[in-house]
Image 1 (spheres, rainbow, N blue to C red):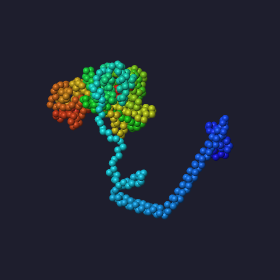
Image 2: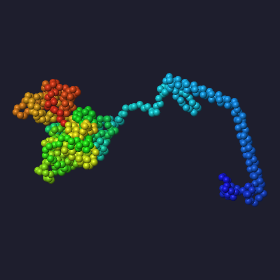
Image 3: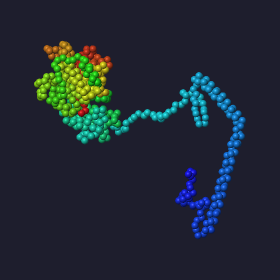
Image 4: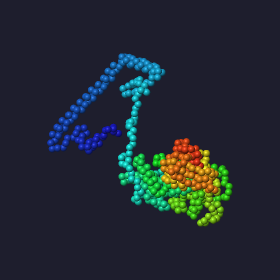
Length: 576
C-alpha cells in the first residue's frame, strides 16, 4: 500500500516521463542528457544540483523560525492572562448585571406608565429605542399614483355614421355580436333571412373610421295589447364594441332605429334589454322584468301532487306531431289576449319558429282517443308545454280546463327526473300562479337583469285601437252616464269619451286636442305605461309621475286602463 499523494518510484518516473519532465535515476539525480559534449552536460548537472540544495535549506530555515514564533506566543498570552485579567472580567460582569437589573426595573415602570419600548438588534450591538410605535412614520410599500379620469381617444368621440348593413358585413357583425350574453349562432344569423317579414334595411350598423362599432336589429311584428292587435316592432341585439362604449354610439343606433320604425308605421315598440336606464333616457317606458323561477323537479312534483287535483275529463300527454301546430296556435291565442306584449302569431310565423329549432321538445295534452289524424276529429288538444333544455318556455292550457296547467307541469317534472335533471326553470308572466308551485315557500326569483321596455310612437293610433276594449270595460262596470278623460302629455293631447248607453252597447271615441275638465298631466313614458296597462294611477300620483286635475280623473284612469299582466314569450327571442 502506498500513501495518498505518493507514487511508486517506477510509476513516478514513468509519469514524469509522459508529462515531458526530465527523468531521475535511482539516486534521485537527474540523468545527464546524451550529447557529444559529455563534460559540458556533467558540469551543468552539478551546478543545478547545488542551487536546488541551497533553496531547500533556506525553506527549511524559514519553517523552523515560524515554528519557534508560534511556540513563544502562547507563553506570552499565558503570562498576560493572570489575576489582573480575571479581576477585570469580574468587574465587567458585575457592571453588566447591575445595568441589566436597572433596565428591567425601568422597563417595568415605563410599561405601567404606558410607554412602549422597542428593542432593535443591529450588527454593532443592542440598542434600546424609546420612541412610541404610534409616532413612527408609516411605511408605504406601494407607490401612490393620482387617480386620473379615463378619457377615451378622440377618434372614439367622433359621431358615428348609422346606415343599413351591407351584404359583405356578415362576418364582422357576427364577430361583434359574439360579445353578447346570448350570441346568435352563424346558422341562426342566416336563418333570419327566411323570416316572413325580413327586410335587409332593418339591420342597422354604426361605422366609425370605416369600422363597424355598433349593431341593432329591427324585427317588425304585430303585438297584442290585451285583446287588440297593433302594428309594432321589436328592437333586438343592440351591441357596441367594448372599447367604444360611453361615446353615445348606442343611443345614436336606437334613435336611428326609432326613425326607421316610425317610417314603417309601427305604433309601439318593445325590447328586452339589460341597459334599461339608457333606454329610459331616450324616452322609453320601463314596464317590468322577466320572471323566471328555478326549482327542483322532485320538490315541485311533490307539491303538485299534494295540492287540489283537477276534476273533469281525463287527458293523455305525449310528444307533439307537426300536424298539430294549428291546435297549439289556437290554444296560444286563447290565452294571449289576457296579456300585454305577446306577438300576434300567424301560422306561417309559427312554422318559421319551429323550423328555426329554438326548442328541444313540445308536450301536448289531449282529450279523447289518440289517433293519428290530420284534423282534430277524435282527439282534441287542450294544452301544451315548450321546453329548451331545463327551461320551460311556454305552458298553456284551454281556459275550459281549469287547473290543467298543474298536470302538464307535473308531466314536465316527471320527464326531468327520468333524464336526471336536478333543476328546471319556469318562465312565464309574473302573475302566473305556477311560480308559487315551483318556488314553494320561497319568493319569486327574477331571471337575471333583463328588463322589458316599450315606446309608443303613435299614441293617437294606439288609443283609437283601444277604444272598443275601453267601452267594453265601462259596460262591464255597469256605468250608464257619459265619461270623459283627458290626457295631457308632450307627445299627445286629447281625451277619450264614452257616450251614454243606448241599449246594450257603449260607444267610445277619441277627441284629439281637447282635455276637458278631468284630465291627467303626465310625461311621455308614463303615458306609454298607462296605455299599455302597466301604470297604477294612484301609485304614480303619489310618486309625482302623474298629476290629476280632479279625483274623478284618477278614478276614471283606473277604470278605463286597469293593470294588465305583462308577458313577452321567450320562445320568440331565444337563440337557436
